Image (tube, rainbow, N blue to C red; front, side):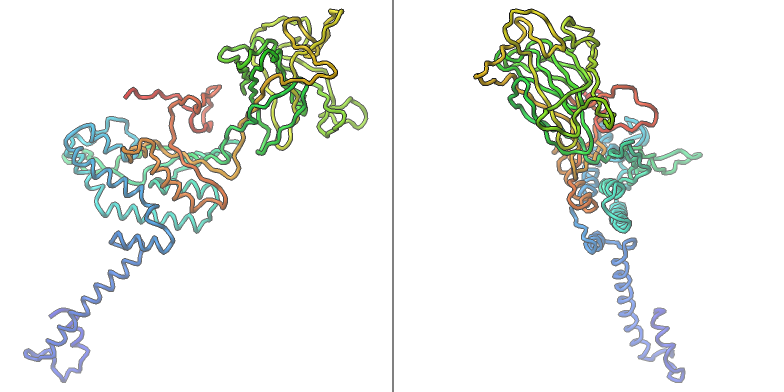
Length: 511
């Protein structure tokens, strides 16, 4: 007789003598107790199924997640990671290459090769098998769901919420977050939440011990820089024009001048609001391009011609028929000191004089900028008339040299385009966040060389924490230098400096 049946019988009056052998009521109590035991077990399982930390079935955890509007697609990376590891497990027991690929699915601090941590492949297969049990998957799923609810309870739309959401989507825990000086870049040091153990000698035996996780980086870039440009626009000599732009701050421009027939001689661009200009003392052949880079170097097609260029800064008078607050003025009572005109100073010194001889030493130029809103520019080439006098005047753009200038149009002529001019600059994209995740997660999808599925899954998981109207883009963090995307630091970074994605110079593998 079970304990529950005995408890039932004890509740009956003693004079019934229900405990005496041969009494049928004992059989009835035993039958009732059996049903109650079954119901108790079922009720306990139901209670456990409703608790995040106690649920024993995958479907129960997914139902708990659904109560918080968490869809299964948000767990896809976790399931993919376990599936990929389970598929590699048989091969890892037979080949060193497969063993290393299996270990690489965990974020481990130890450098490759890592198989020696386990001694041999069968030992690795045994420890990896334990790490891939269903209970480990369920524990990881619990951690995912709990982290999502915790982030929501603390508030969405913040840098911390986005960073925690991205890390949680990859089963990573954030150890610290460092912010750049301008607060646009945020670098989180993360560690893998999933653990892989290995045998460690202790006395005459071995004990399992977690392998130390690697300190990886996860980056958030608010309002990422993107290239903006005006496109090629035909410009005439002495043409005044304006450029409207959005953004958050003044940006340095790059100038591309494309030669038009034989009229692009001595081109110069001026920012009328800054009082700063840059120019080239030679000719740009038809169809060739003259590029003034952001760093102040100048390329004619692929040749560096900085030694034939000049820059200047100083007083710059705008259109008298359209006076603006940013115009430079003569000094005097009530004049704004920031807008008082001064004599132009050139780089190199004396480059604006008619007697200056090019080429010079080739020092980099200081490029003009472009402000938020409207910025006024002017474009010039060397233009002149025939004259019986050969007297030269300064500054250089006001003079014409034989075989180095274009004819000025007559009173009834229409001035033709002197060049095609394109201004471009790096502008911060509004309502946008870039998330950069560790590159090792690209290995989860060997059939998808670009990892697009992984990137889309992370973006889906982060979207629930983003501010309304903000676009989230996800990329793999890559320390390898890529032409057109990589950025080489101009100086050696100081200790503790925060650098952005794509600043490394790691060599590509030949494999």
